[in-house]
Image (cartoon, rainbow, N blue to C red; front, side):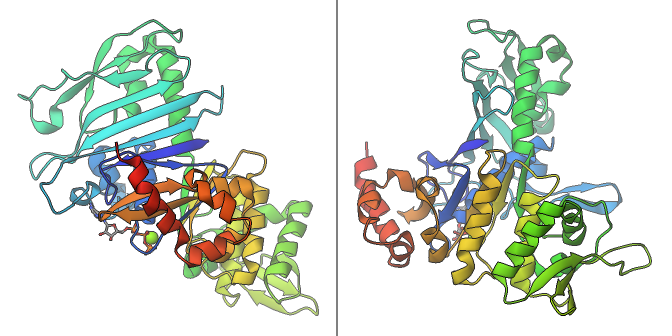
Length: 429
Ligand SMILES: Nc1ncnc2c1ncn2[C@@H]1O[C@H](COP(=O)(O)OP(=O)(O)OP(=O)(O)O)[C@@H](O)[C@H]1O
Ligand SMILES: [Mg+2]
């Protein structure tokens, strides 16, 4: 589980450390252009590392054979990943992720500082480390004397000390790595680390944590498209919805739960789901069956119904990711049905195996958060033109004023922005 993401000089984020605390269900609010989607980009950057890409690929794009686009980079590309504030341009940004590792519940902290380079130099690693609580000072960390400036930019090496023993107090060898790719995704392939199983184990565990993050940006046309039975992973735009739902419906209890959610969300009297073949190559498409026998295909089901079913498919599916990031999650859901979305998210996250992070503009969603989820929500706002993050748990007045005003009312009135700006003064050194 991810417990925090810290951004420094990444996109619109300021040059102080901006820490986004994360819980099982973490909503992010903030005005337009405050930096919510930039947070998502930060998390996508970290996820891109787990795919073994070079920094240029993580930030730019990754194509595979046949010209198939496998990864869409970070919005704005290389130059705009680093803060632009009108003054002299810096070239480095830092991201750091804290997580609890699934295998032994230890806290791991991974940090990377990237130099975005220039026209002739691809982006490169300036500093990087992985620290696991109780396992000495580091699993690996870069050494400042690493750079050989005589080499061509993309052949330059960086040196990192990699932990030899799992016990505290033991150091390890200094190894060389490519500089244009995060060391995290190189360690297990480095021949010298065969002798360093503890380092490999923790690097692998951390990579698994950041690999299992999904970024869903649902689009109705993709939700409607027929899919092949057996495709049980929902695509980022909601592709494969029909076959994912079909797999869920194979389980009687889940099928009933899904029907119940749909009946509550919509005025339709849905009593069943069917998945008829709709093409010669065997593709199926969702069909909602109403009492009285009326059948509605995904083609003409409403956008909101499909979006809601996609949430359910992602979270209750047979093959869920460990962490989901949903953009503008209330899209298409009526305010007086917001409680259903929160209920669904609570149900999906309650046993601790799935984590949900989502941006929202909806006061109604906030109103249905319980105290735990309210603690884990955050505000993104601007101060001196740069983005900053403030966790709700660090707004002391919220817990007093919340007795009389709902979080949604406070959201609509701009109270959160005012409270965060007021606290700015306290943060000055
Ligand atoms: N490198 C950068 N330096 C400074 N500002 C940047 C940089 N890259 C992007 N921005 C700013 O970030 C803002 C966009 O932020 P973002 O997309 O995260 O907004 P948002 O909170 O998701 O808004 P919305 O609710 O409208 O989607 C833009 O105003 C843009 O100017
Ligand atoms: Mg946005």
